[in-house]
Image 1 (tube, rainbow, N blue to C red):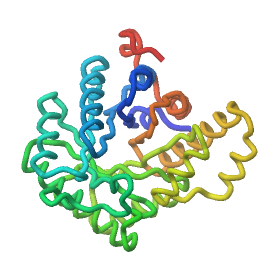
Image 2 (cartoon, one colour):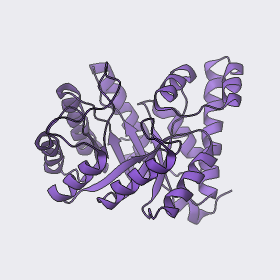
Image 3 (cartoon, rainbow, N blue to C red):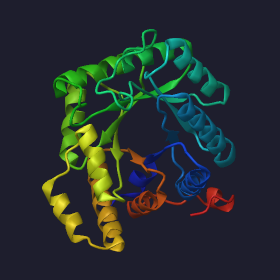
Image 4 (cartoon, helix red, strand yellow):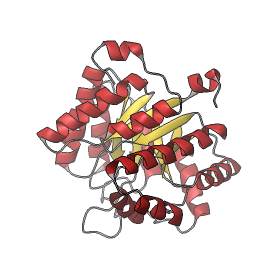
Amino acid sequence: MHTETEKQTLSLSFEFFPPHSTNANLRLWRSVERLAPLAPKFVSVTYGAGGATRERTMAAIATIKDRAKLNIAGHLTCVGASKAETLGVAQAYAKMGVKRIVALRGDAPKGESHFTPHPEGFASAAELVEGLKEAGDFDISVAAYPEKHPDALSLEADIENLKRKVDAGASQAITQFFFDKDDFLRFRDLAVKAGISVPIIPGILPIENFEKMTRFAKMCQANVPDWMHKAFENANTPEAVEVLSTALATEMCDDLMQEGVRHLHFYTLNNPNLTYNICRAIGVPVDGFAAQNGLVA
């Protein structure tokens, strides 16, 4: 059980992705409505290479900021854009009143096996962070990988890269999802040993669809334990999957809180119910003001 003080000091953040259709737009807004009463410290909206995704991200950010009055972070990547174009997006965020940015190198575009920097672009997330700090007063989050980034030569090399991002001005790191708390705890210890003093926030992925999650995990080389495969094989109804997913993520969050974690970042995939139920299970209260103002659970 957690004390009231622990519950009060826990903060949350939620990641959404930009909608690609009218129906998806409604789903995004329903996700925001569902999760806003949990009073997140901030929410973020993902961002991919290419103009269409960029426009959808900006529109989603404007809607969430204006209607839900939530603190919001815009994602930014180095993919397929010059430094001027990338910093132009950051300045557009700033004009909207968005000063939080999740700065990422970004994945290779579809059809390409490796990330190749734009000839006039940022070559790494550390360069992007440095550019953002020079361009404005941004609060910058970066990515961390408890099981190492797929492109990194080793976990030690990956931690050195994280330190470069922090030294360039990042104020916190959000991890890729993981399913073994010890992977996160080992990584956190190694980061501290390497001189990284900013908060390292665990990224939590509630599992709505196990097969889809395993495909995603394979892409980012996140380990899915054998026992988890067996557990989901035995969960043969949607209700059983929901109960199992909620129980596993709740236990993970609870264990992390026992280890001193005070902020949890949820990858919602615009499916808010699992995230909501997990947060309530670990004792997160509902903000009555948000609920009274139409953002009801």
